[in-house]
Amino acid sequence: MAKNMSLFKVEGTLDNVTFYKSADGHFVRTKGGVSKSRILNDPAFVRTRENGAEFGRSAGAGKMLRMASGTMVFKAKDAKLSSRLVQVMSKIKNLDTVSVRGERNVAEGLLTAEGQQVLRGFDFNNRAPLLSVLYAPFSVDNSTGALEIADFTPKEQLNYPAGATHFSMRSSFVVLDFASGVRDVTYSTPVNLPLTMATATVTLTPSGIPQGSGTQIHFLLIEFFQEVNGAQYSLKDGAYNVLNILDVV
Image 1 (cartoon, rainbow, N blue to C red):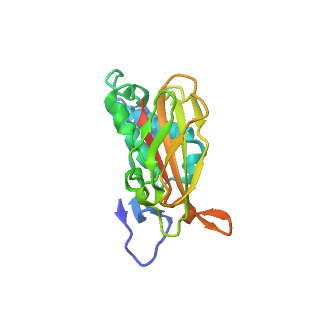
Image 2 (cartoon, one colour; image 1 turned 135 degrees about the vertical axis):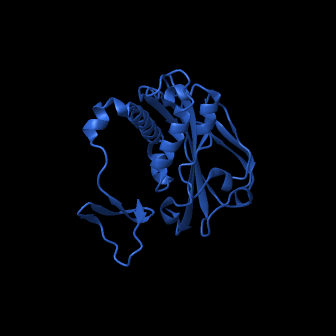
Image 3 (cartoon, rainbow, N blue to C red; image 1 turned 90 degrees about the horizontal axis):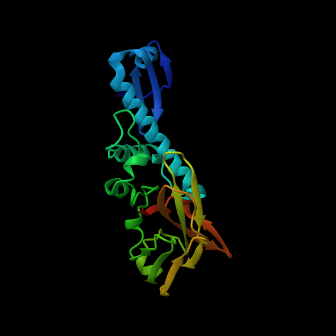
């Protein structure tokens, strides 16, 4: 694959050369390669089929997680979220020491402490990682999903964007079975506060404990707003918002 550096940014196929545009710029590649039929049937490509099957499961696991985050993901995400999730899920899949090659999966990988650690702390918006925005210690009760930030002073302990006057926080408690895709989600009531020097304890408690079996995941969403004439508006379509996986059990 080569990058197109010419003045003319062509898109399409000319003879055996394809010009296309991605988020990283304009590229060019040649057509060709092994046929799909041969890859699916030739014994020489058994490793390729195994890798493809595991990649597909990792991509599916990433989609399950995005779906489990509910509408919060639409408020805090970056352009490469899907590909970053596939990378993370592939790392977790590699920690499956039970399944045979070609059958390794995220559900087994998350049964390990190492697999849970890979997912813990994942940021859905790489432009606004939690650790660069929230400078306050917090605790999560894994049995109830309650999040507490004690003695929180927003204007000192939040790295907020210029123009912001308010922020909101909301948490969710998810139980997701990565083997079946079955999930249950509960949410806390959003807490909306002005960006001031007032100190208080912020507590976010989901409406209940989600049912089912699988991996327990705790999410935190932080949004920033600007108030104009009594109405609050999201800043730059959520570019500064945070969505983070606080804990995985």
